[in-house]
Image 1 (tube, helix red, strand yellow):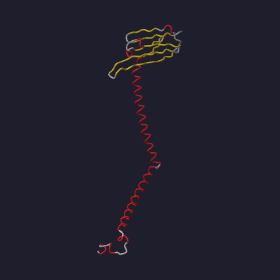
Image 2: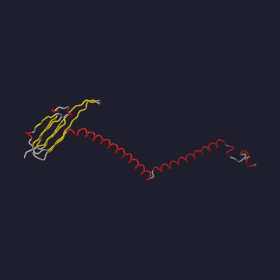
Image 3: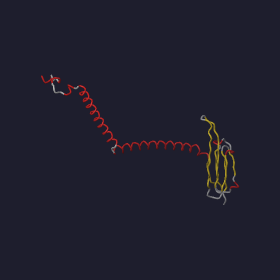
Image 4: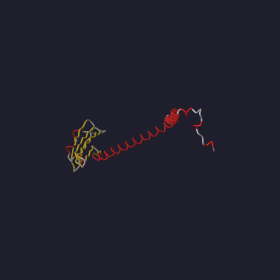
Length: 178
């Protein structure tokens, strides 16, 4: 039991007992070296993990997947916009071929129900139709513009083109030469 009553002051040759400042400096130095060693080990683990090729490939895979999701979302959004635009403009104009002529039937409702808002130009075997209309809605004033060029296989007779309005339809008859 006497070993448990160890008294450091009993030793006359003890250097730290005679120099208490040195005792504090040595304890501080040992604490600093321990903290530095712990920091070095943690930093070394971190940099080894950061530079590991397998982990870098996993990070790149995750980044590519995120980018692919963003592009897919963007493409779906743009496709929806384009599909909506096609749905809104597709039923305006229909082309029918008869025995000796082509009939272009235009729905006038989107173009203010006015045939003066439709312009027809011919150039050789091509017919260009430009149309515009305005509509007031809860979002403000919306302008609808439509332009399409039709190229016909037969030679058309541009001098005998007739334009007739029947209700909400504007019928353009384009005869072709025999």
